[in-house]
Length: 252
Image (tube, rainbow, N blue to C red; front, side, top):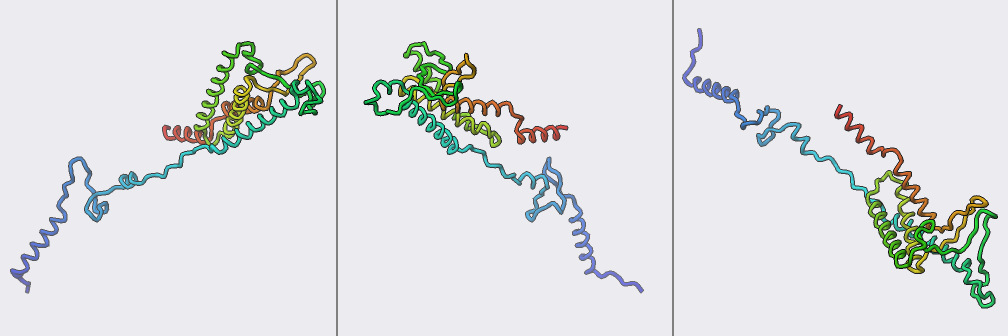
């Protein structure tokens, strides 16, 4: 004996069929956008993707490197102090004007020449009215002095601007620039105060060749320029090389 469907079972079957058709009906997505699956929907019913999540994640940026101006000032100040102090000593002890009257001179221990290494290294007072190796030394004061003042100021501005662009790996340049700056300031002070630069170190290389007299500022400038040359001809920095190799790998 079979059971016959009652009239109240019909609405239940119709509701089940209607709900099933509603669940299986396609969902229209906005034009130009792919349809998101149920697992990709958030609680607001909006589609999300892994690419969208990745775009929302902002990689932390490395802090911008800024060279220490304290280091620049400290090394330059030490170089300047050593240069000016040695020049003061040379002028006080080696200047021939101090020997005009030894009885009344306030510097009775003044010497005109001190031989440090026989026939090779002497300390002797000299006035350099020109530049390196006496360049423009024969020109008039009206031309020579403004020229060297402008050159010194331009060099100082260039050094400071170049120091601002230092990379953390440029150790040689980091030391070279303050040395050149301190030396340039030392010679600049002399030109402003005396109109000439005090030199007192004399090196005799051979019996017939004597190197032009120089001072501590000249030594600092030569060492600093040498360090700048080392930085210029040194291999590429590892950071830049790593970036270049990574770019080649991604391109290949």
